Image 1 (cartoon, helix red, strand yellow):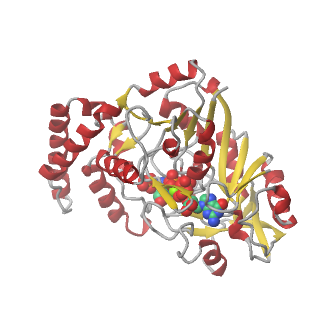
Image 2 (cartoon, helix red, strand yellow):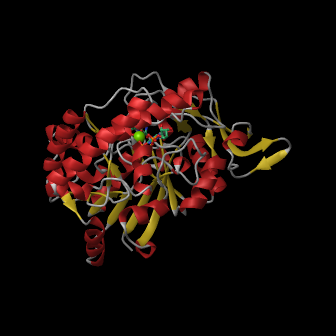
Image 3 (tube, helix red, strand yellow):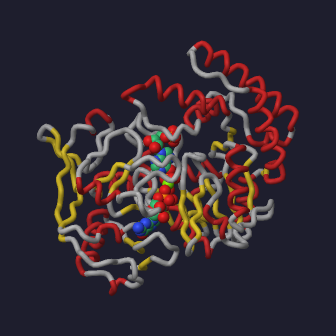
Length: 428
Ligand code: GDP
Ligand code: IMO
Ligand code: MG
């Protein structure tokens, strides 16, 4: 069967982009199904670094169709900017290799203003969103008052709807004493973007199903991570969509019978950006070592917002839950090279609170904030792994670390990356 779903198994930024890019060599279609430009997926090819926010990571492969699914929320102005940036980097983007669902929802400047205002109002309890308007756009979708991408085909009605939406938003913003939107300028920017994007719009679910019937191989490119899922994450410190494997089906419009591989991507340690519980966080020298100083592009600073990511030990309790809700058939791990230089490594195998043991994360974020991880300690290694290309070239302790993770999670770990470059990969 022809569909592989690739899911961020943790809190995002696991290295999904580089794995999608690597697997896209044997795909016909690479499709995003959830979220919007809150995502930041990095691909490194020699000296070229590509940072993708909306456009699927398959775009770099000639012959692959990159598809934005109905489950997404799309900022048209930012999408056009991203397209132009990639075109300037020599990437070909035409309606032949890039299509956008008519059913995806549009992020307007009003959504961004509301995201900002809500975060400010939350004060110390802020979620730490990417301020891209994601939450408010999904609210309008679920409230059945969103604007859909298909409306961009009728520029006149699109502009009129947008104009009215922004004017109405200004009433609310004025009431809340928040800076007003420049309705005329925003409308013009959106009008221009809509005219650019019109040729790319399609009924993508029908397209996808027709291609599947003809034997096409499809990669669904997850964004965010399963632990940020609105249902399964540490609510309310989550994103507003379903970045888990179930979301791929609704976010693209195909049935589960097509899927033969659900690949979870996990870093060999934990990172999180934004607020919310993170039981294995190391707000100390260990965390700083995992994060890096920012001098390398792969150091733990957000691809979308530049924020320093919180870092900590690998959390098997979270990963166990992630595997359960997604049905991973295998796991790929990233950033093994970053663990070189630790004398010992820790893996949280359970949590403890008030005499109770937790093998899965409790649903209540306030409880999750209070748990203490129960760690298993493994020996580290000092060797530089960035040149390794076969399992035999990894130190015995690195192999043992991966093997232990595989045992604990009861899943095959089929590959591990040892650097950000496309080829810095070891198949196990
Ligand atoms: P994504 O959102 O899941 O696609 O991940 P991001 O691109 O936001 O973050 C992953 C970061 O780690 C990027 O800077 C990648 O270039 C980098 N990266 C990916 N795999 C590896 C690896 O194996 N080693 C190192 N050092 N960096 C990696
Ligand atoms: P990729 O695809 C990491 C986080 C934000 C915040 C929460 C809600 O690159 O892995 P939102 O703007 O979605 O309303 O923010 O979700 N978040 C991500 N963290 N990687 C991402 O995407 C993220 N997308 C959203 O930091 O905590
Ligand atoms: Mg990212």
